[in-house]
Image (cartoon, helix red, strand yellow):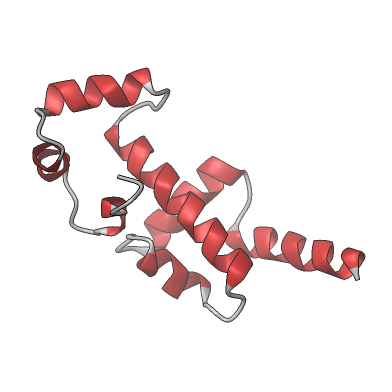
Length: 106
């Protein structure tokens, strides 16, 4: 998962991921839950949000929408909902915090 970043595929499904990993859906879901995620979608979305955060930290020229699409989201609204759920803020609020942090360090 980490090396090939298959979670970036917007068409990724539980069945296709399970097949890639050589297991069945039930076993994969059980492993995901053992790792502390609520389910397959939580696992995938956390990877996507983490990648989004890394991207906007390193590439300030990328638009929010383009960054969401590059990490595997097909819908900006879905991405925004997940972002707020996992970070507690909007991407704009997050980026403003980064900007303010950089200004304080200079």
